[in-house]
Image (cartoon, rainbow, N blue to C red; front, side, top):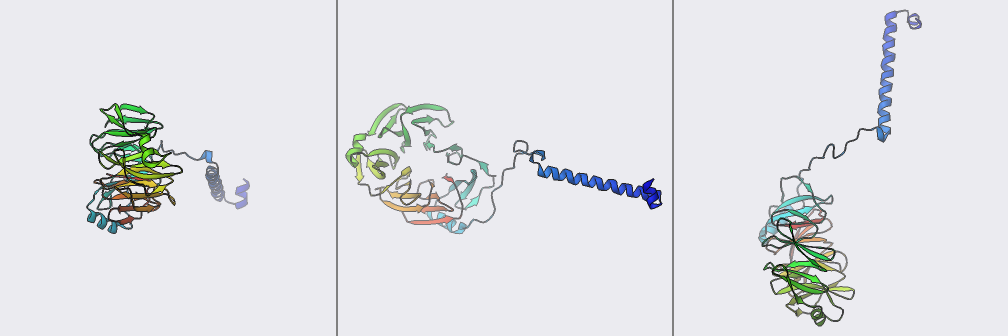
Length: 328
């Protein structure tokens, strides 16, 4: 009655009543929205389990340095697929020498990984025998051997640094000695602790090897606070070492050269001739892989992928960031 008498018209009163109701409703909605925005517990929750994020497709943005690298790779005659782990530990694949992304989506991988000849990804550093696909890996102080399908075959205690000779026989380092595995189980010392001391002096200790062929190999040897790169043929030193660093590890050899992670003035990938002489270095490099055939290496540096032909002292680079890489 008070509303009707105030405006002198019942219809006008009903119109005002609806305006008031609408205003109250609008205020209620606004208050609800504000409450939801201000209270994290009141917000709707969406988890990756409830709604998995779709796999991201490879970028189609042109890669800086693409034309230069394509010409370099075509000139050197190498090809294959480069597997790259990005800073979010997702795998992307680059087809070479075209330097083009594969069309499949990115996928999560371990931040450090190994890719076998079939393209399967394995965690960390697995040494894969190229002929039959056997896998050897060091875990703590044990070398474990697996078949192509991942089934365990045998374990060797008190051992690490597995490496395959080109003929498919396994070697590893045990207590500073290089051991060869024959017939899957029989073991024979190829380079003893005393052989190493005789070649390089008192206190020298073998850490790791990589094979050029079935007789000759590169070795990292600790000598005091430094590690030297030495080349042996059997038990004989080919030449006295000419390079030392606080670290020399993850050796990978081809028939004509060997590469390793080093740290003379900071992280680097260093290349050596078959005689053990330094021939090229990529400063800031932290991961590398030889091309199929072993003539060119890809190196992941701070913000580049550097392709190096160490025997010709030639290189080209892409503006890409990778935490790890494998060339297959």
